[in-house]
Amino acid sequence: MFANFPRYTRFIARRERVISLGWIIGLVAFIAAITAAYPNLFASYDALKAMVQTVNSPGMVAMMGPVFGFPDNLNTPMVMAQQCLLWVALAAAVMNIFFVIRHTRTDEELGRHEMLASLPVGRLTGSLATLCSAFVLNLLISVISAALVILVLGHVTIQGSVPGSVAAGAFAYCLSIGAQGFAFAGITLLVAQLFSTSSGTMGVSVALLIVFYMIRAVGDMQGSALTYLSPLGLGLRVQAFYTNAFWPIIVLVAEGLVIGGIALMINAKRDVGMGVFAARKGRVHAKRGMCSPLGFSWRLLRNAMIAWAAALLLLGAAYGSVAGQSSVYSEGNGMMAQMINNMGGYESLVVTIMGLLISVPLIVAMNKLRSEERRGRIEQVLSKAVSRGSAFLSYLCIAVLASLLFPFLLVIGFYAVGASSAPAGTLDLAALLKASYGYLPAQLCMIGLSAFLVGCFPKLTSLSWVMFAYSFLVVYFGGMFQVPEAMKKISPFGNVPQLLIQGQELKALPLVILCVIAVALMAAGLIGYRRRDILGT
Image (cartoon, rainbow, N blue to C red; front, side):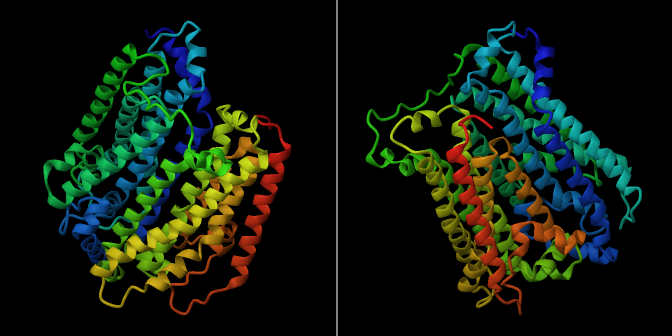
């Protein structure tokens, strides 16, 4: 059942030489950069204590995890771990979800699994090789990151004393990230056996990630054992640079192995291409709305767009729940305080984060056309009385319409909850909407870039995600790392005025230029899609 396991593992490594390498470089670089910058954010030990006090409220504990070592046993690496571990672990979990789905359910959908099964490959070789490869990937990220953290902390001034050794704290911090990622690899492998489509597996896996985040949030706020039911909550219990407990890491790895073993047992019994839960049968005749290219494209994207709309509304509400506490952030000199000051206030920071985050579903919507092409399904659509231009424009229209709706949902969620927690008169709905829609031209540019790549350079569609990652880093962390203004201007988001900053005026010219660039990219993508070969260059 595990024939040719070593060769299959090397095959996965060969396929992942670009994507996984990019994840390794990105996560390791981020961890090292935050580690280098964090000690310099506190002028004194009192400033460190003031910062921790601001994040010791129930709302912030729910968002970022529990505070430990307060008030007498604090140090800068400990505070860094408290505020950053959860977010890096979430990124590692997403990486593992994508990784496992790529090599399991997606391969079955595209027929690769049957082709490989025709060779001398065991029935469970693919699943086991995927799980083992995920373990190696997470281990590499953890070990390399820990080595860099030790190196960086050896050349900076640390506020407070570190219990034990810096090396123990660094390995507890980084191994916790890798262990949480591996736990989600096992969970995703199990979900891939239960559902018969990659989209269903993706949706359930991401939903479980959100559920585990909420379980951890409730458990941390209550100080109950509920948090131990979540891999995210368990991973925070390492208390890096404080107690340096390694038992949560062992438990998380064991969870990944046990859940992965259950997945292998199910995989041994289920039919190839099928899941334990059979896919729901479709209608005999399509609804009238699906008979048009736009209606059909909407049907393919409907579930994802509705899920994103609900998630963005809830995210806005989550940010709004701590709007009343935003004034205390300026009391400390920590990373959050510096970010808020650089962005011109808490509301401005939230609008910036929202503007960046909205780009994700917009890119997903436009790239869905390329996904349908790679799976050979777009040919069936184009074989009917549907032109290439109509197919292209249908996905483009959905992405543009989503860019008009999503900022409204985020602001409404933020204002509805924030108005009750913030002092009366501090939140202005009209100003929030104006500032949020100020990012619309930048979001249209991201749609335009995706459309251009899908239409002209389909093999390079991942560059739209590179631009998103670059934009997030230079805009969100640009002030803290003193990124030159010219580098910010490369991103479309670096050209958007911060309208919530007092005295900042609306400058129409940069927004008009962004709109022109967006339209030009969309038009170029449409022309390219009409001319190029399907499944060609």
